[in-house]
Each structure stands twice: as structure tokens, then as C-alpha cells.
Image 1 (tube, rainbow, N blue to C red):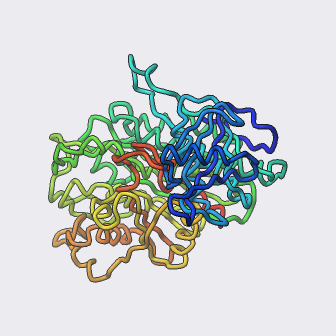
Image 2: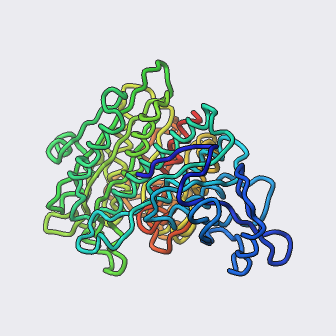
Length: 496
């Protein structure tokens, strides 16, 4: 984990990171070093010769100057003020390019404390590598940047130090999500998922921080009527689990939210077996569970005065002689029956259990949010960088979208058309687990809506595409697990 700092003193690090922008002049570029004064004339001439443009995600390195190496990270077109997400991505790009480096100072344009947080966060998020399972080749791969210092005249302000602390926590738990997503299914089963969270539980402060953890095993799940989790997991040699993490702040009369995350540690499709091409990415089908668990721990470590009830239904969806068959009927926790027409539409079944269970809390909930890599239709509709939001409460959705504008995570509101609900009708059960193929993302949202009280504000986040990056790394986003939604959940709670 990269150490994040703030300073306004002498640059002592081996590497200096500054911004580079394009100007209105044809082919013109300019250096943006924020509060750090540097002699830019000769540097600009060298950069022009090297063909640097200042476009986003562009990294150019020049030896010498106030540090051993100057790294220029693209900010796009020159502006009086740069959006925080531009700074976050630029810092992330630089941090990625500095793998194997001991320390770097980031001198980028800082107009306010939020910019300090964005730069530190970008550096922390970009400084990520996953080498846990490398053997003989591990030494061939560089370690993440060890230390990043944000250079700013705000350095001595308490708010700047608080921003660095927050960025450290956000980076730490985003890395946790990524680590869980990147862990192969041979090492991440429903049971081992809960054990990996145990170490992070202690790191977040444990009982002293107001955290509590309970785990239901397969016998308890069956005896207590969690038909969705049991039905999905019964085909696997690795039995299902239900992980519950609660966070109760010391402050009384606080708002309380429930998080529910889809935790399919590997999804073969069950008896509706998926094609082999691309199935390796199905280790990421627990991204929702990882995100909600990490967000809860981050909220606790930050000491935010909002209570959280987090539920992670965990199962492995495998084909076997004990697997759920197409046309089987299962009973969701609470009593509703579902005809399982497609065992590959399994995420909504475990989420249904989790959503209903979350609403049995003795304390009144102010809102409930589920997070899931739920449908391929999400990728078709919104691509691989924009997630979907569905809701039964416009005000709650607006608050979340406002939070995502600050975090830089891309979400887009989608409808729940009532005319699609009839496609979920079953002739033999309360409803079926699939309906109209057209608008499949929306149909899945309508299915989940059946398990949420109408008067409880609810958000459904479908992160199927953005949760796992199979393309090139960009900004602060690596290849593999991205950690999407974790930061926005924390920000939503901060706003509350």
C-alpha cells in the first residue's frame, strides 16, 4: 500500500510529477506544476521535440531538473481550473507509470482541498499491482510506487491532512476489492472470502470501531429458509455462505443504510453452462459483495456517523448432479417462490435472499442498495465504463448520482418499465427468474424490486461491465478488478 503525504517544502523525492496541457496554439503545450515554481522554458522545448501533446493518459519522462526524473502527465486542454476527476486520473496514470519507484512528489494544479484529495486518491489508486500468485517470475515484475507526496500550499492546513488520510483509506479498500476480484476461484470460495475479510475487519478497527461480523454456513442457510443462496450453491463442492457486517457508530439517532452485494465467487452458468470463451472473467462475479464489504469497512475506519448493515450472499454456481435444474422452484427467504427457468440468472436469486433479510433489521432503514455484476445486458446498453442505477425513489437516486459526480465513477440512471414486469410471471410460482430478453437489465431490476418494500428507498447498481477491466489500463484503473462503486458508496454515506 502506497504511503500518501502532503508537503510544501523542498522536493526531496527522486521523481517529480507535473501536469502537461495543450494550448490554443497549434501544437502548443504548457506545463502545469501547481504551487511549485519550476523553469519550464527549456523543458517545453524538449517536450515539443519528443512529440508530447498533453492529452489525457499521456505520460512523458525527462531526466534532470529539480528531481532525478520529471514525469509529465496529461491534463488535456489548458484551463483555469481542472475538474477533480481530471486530476485524479492524471495522478493515477503517473502512479501506474512509476511502478518500481521508491517515491514521487505530485505537483499538479491545486485550487482547493478537494483537489488535494483527488490527486492523493488518484496516486493511491493508480499505485496498484497484483503479484500474489506469481512464482518464478515474481522478481521480473515491479512493485507499486511506495510513497506519493502531494505538493500544495495547503500542506499545513488540517483539512489537507484530513484529505490525505481519507485518500489513504479509500485507496486501501479499493485495493481490497481489486485483490478479492483478482484472486482466482481456486483460492476464493464462499468460505475463504469470509476468512479474507476477517483480516480486513481487524485492520478497520474491529469491535472497537463499532464493527460486528456474523457468518451463516450452508446448514444454517438451509434451516432458516435462504432458498436463493442454497439453490445457487448446491451444485458446488464449495458450500455457500451469508456474510453480515454491521457498523454502528457511537453517535445516537443516526441514519442507517443496508448494502447487499452479489457474491458469486465463480459463475459457470450452472446447468445453463456458459461458453468457454470469456468464462475466466467470471471470477469477478463477486465484485458487488467485495465492494459493499470494503465500503462498510472504509466507513467504519473513517468513523462516519451513519450505521451500515452489509450483507454478502456468497455462492459458487457450478454444474453437477446436485445443481438446480431449469424449471426447479425455490423459496426465497420470506416465502416468495421463484421458478428457476435459467440457472445462469443466479445473481438475482442470492440478492433476493439478501434484500429480504436486510429488511428484517430491528432498526428502521433509511435506504437499501444492492450492487451486482448482474447482466450482460448492462454491457450492451452502457458499455464497459458506465454502470447502471435503477430505483424506486428518485430523490435517493439523485443523491447517489451526485455522489458519483464527485468520485468520478460513471453511473447512468435507467428506468424500470412496468410493462416489462408481466414477462416475469410464472404459471407455477410467484414469479420466474427471467423474463423478456429485450431490456434484460431492466427486467433483472424489476425482479429485485419484487423483494423490496415500496416505501423503502432502494437503489440497484448493475456494475457488470465496469467491475472488471479486460482492456488496457487507463488513468487510475488497472487491468482486472477495478473496485467500482466502493468509492461512491462511501461518498453517499459522507453526504448523508
